[in-house]
Image (cartoon, rainbow, N blue to C red; front, side):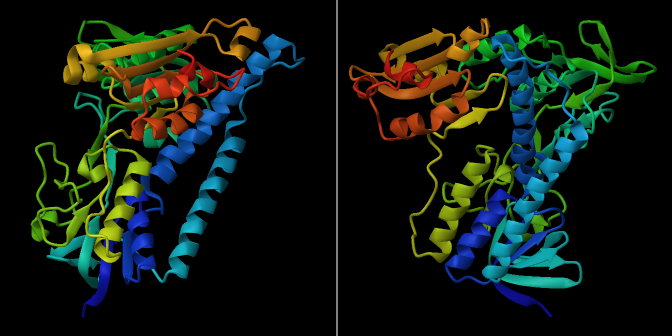
Length: 447
């Protein structure tokens, strides 16, 4: 005998939890089906533990800077197991907070793997759940290269199982995850080589930001190896060996990390039974309201192939819940001008159009403003690394359509300026704003 719910959610990641909570607050009877830990990728093997490791890496670099400016200290190594214990306790608290909210809102958490056995009917073990509405929020998983030996090494999830810093590590990839892990491991003492199939970092970002990051990574001692596809990986006595397409063999890595992208979790959920269509890339196809082609079945988050960011998944889910259960029929997420940060070393913040994209769209109407400078602490410590700030503007009134930052505090600076861009700010609006001195952020209103 089946049990009836207003909403059944497949997946307790950021998207699934956000819709479940918002729908329950609107009065819906909700069940969430999840076989793993609450919070999905972000909380368990993504944003949260990644940011924790980035903070540890920042502290490692801060020790060295403190020594340079006159503090009588000698930089020390991270006690990795101790830090992991703190990181795990922090994540446990997040799990507990989710359970508390579920209990307060009478959301039923159903442990196990759910699959469609009929349109809007979900089987979980021996139970069957009927639903007026179903959200598929099953996320994505790490991808590896399909080469001989591609099963060797670890992926980004495996990174969080490390209990010591590798001596020498090879990271395969050139996107968010690759550059973030490279920066963290280098700051914590590893020798790092990043091997990329393409010819640049962070493809899709403004090219000057990627170039500036590459320069900073090299300055930190990270070896960048571009346009070198891997043909084969082997395990040898002294570590992993990477056989490259140019005939070279890179040897002696005691750890190998694959960071070559993510694929959607669409298998094993009976999506075909529900008639849910996938797009050409294998993601669930949705319209601007998160509807799939199947009636009353929705999809949000990484499984859809849209912008793969936790705040995007949360915002889209909440708006979907408001539309379905909250009496707001036009509620949907605007996917334009979403700000994002890459927790590299140094960090990156970006929102809006890159210069390349702006010129494709607006041609000669584009005007670019830049500022390059040494942050105050860097200069005091005798460092040479420079922050780059870039405004991409359009038209005679110079409407700001892109803001791109790389340097100390870029991750924190961007949020407020992203609001200004979203509201249609002109460069004259920035010029009219009094600077806060001495800060890095002031450079954005002094160009």
